[in-house]
Length: 418
Image (spheres, rainbow, N blue to C red):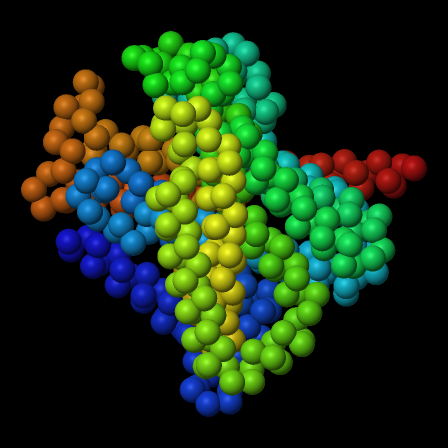
């Protein structure tokens, strides 16, 4: 219990430390969508994602520790997507030549290089850790076609969204059509996941995974967390990207509309968020994502219905969060740090969780109790996981920056020679 209370208090302290409230009447935070402000909210989301991953550990679930973070993942990632979508449209509208060099600056330097640096780091880690991969799996993991790091799905989806943005907004001059096509890209990803499922259900006899030792005898590429879009977390948060784009395109009018009778509209958004939350909870109970385990086959339709019900739920919560930012701005060094290194901490979080897992998980090599008296092993685990995530993130960023700097120097030298 004390771990839960301590974590909640620390997160609350992060929110109020250095915060600025514009008042209950007509005042608003003028720069609530500035780069520094959005970095702060991304920083808070990054901290909460680390806690979300920790809360998913079996020992934490069995002990009921920090379980408020257990199902926060989609909303937290949707915040990242919102900020990315918002930034793209703002830059597109303010910089005439923004799409020139977009692929190199945004996709290659911004996402692809950090992604493959992460792949190499995790490859070295898995060798040291003793993880068994088939020879072909090593090849596909290193190419990024399968998952060396199961948390690395986010930059892959972000690359897809950036590429779609570059093609659509570079070729389509009609804004309404361009936005519709971006929304279609998001829905098509949801459809693809609904068909693809959580593993290769189609690669063997009907319900092969429900048979005794089904997963143990299945080939590696048939397993969970291997191939792109194996899992609803690949698709259910990207609606934030579209909402961010849409808001950026109509920022002045939308902001002005919400400022009139702000508290009434904030309450209305909250009520809608709660209603959509109830709808999503109902559909997840009635239909669900994990329909493979019903014994009735993949359940593609059930997955898609559940996916559709989550879109307004996640979207409305994200809107509510950014409405709060109109009145309150959180700002402190910790949030700035995690905002700057949000992608790095996200990607490097899995290694500490795996390395320190023997502290809280029974096993042949470490037959310790899953929860010790006072839950002190859970507390130590959480502290070590967070601290090592930060250290590894800084190391990964240093390597990434060094590679990008070297590539830019080569490009500059080549351009000078030409």
